[in-house]
Length: 365
Image 1 (spheres, one colour):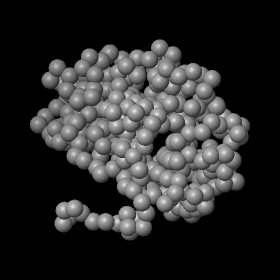
Image 2 (cartoon, rainbow, N blue to C red; image 1 turned 90 degrees about the vertical axis):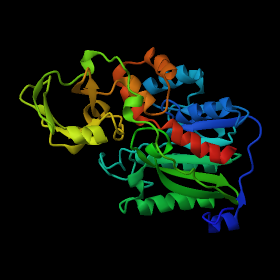
Image 3 (tube, rainbow, N blue to C red; image 1 turned 135 degrees about the horizontal axis):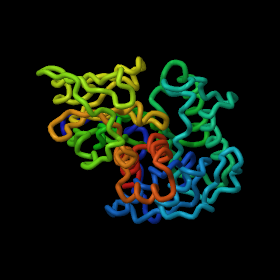
Image 4 (tube, rainbow, N blue to C red; image 1 turned 90 degrees about the horizontal axis):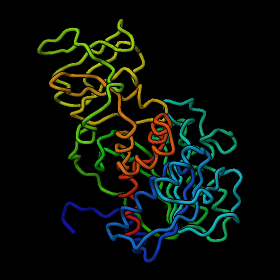
């Protein structure tokens, strides 16, 4: 150990996780398009694990379930559909459960009704996983919960502590942390809360962050249909600013700061809205903001250099998939069974594959 490394109290108190051997059996809840399965596929391809088997998935949105089956070549009959209708006896044994339960009632962009046990909000569906842990004959060795970072805010922290206490009472040690996808190889600033639970007296260490070596433009498509461009005409420009027209409504415009465009990050604004999430323009030389199910198009306007002219456009659905850690082949499969509008929604609802990959790698290797 180097002199700069430290040992936590948890490392002294609990055993390190043993390397997982054999085929990992997985079940996911609120499965979306299958980020954990994609991460396990990568771990398998890299010979970090021997392989994995999907025992079931649970996705109530039929359109997302279609994409899931297309991407992962799974039978739709494995879908348990509605978590509230499942009994523990319905579930086969799994080594790993993963659930990114709904965030609408916790998110800063949502209605913030919370996820109290008896609240009947969509976010309270996370408690259904607690119920199922109690009901199954053999508990999974590992469970991962995911949600928005604001779950740790003062409005929700009491409920979160109750949630984690229930996990502990069921025999799990839990480890919680907020991770950002830009710290794990993806040019998207997306903070998410992760709760890793391990059955028994084991220590877990979250993956270390690393310097991002990609910019947004490195993952953007080279040839994009003109329908994605929101501006066409340069109204005025100088050494500091460029002002572009708004194709949809000529009375509004896009104002771009040249220096900020070069530097990366937020580099301008859209005068057609006062809402900050939809007002900001993001440079292709930096990272994009958090992709959400409801506002990828309106909330992720990017400034690109097209033929030596700065232009504003929206992300394509394929780019949205790439920015969630899926690849072009995954997108092609999903696009055969879903509309582009649905694909935007499914990308925004997913967990970033790369973050899940590093979390699982630290559990299984």
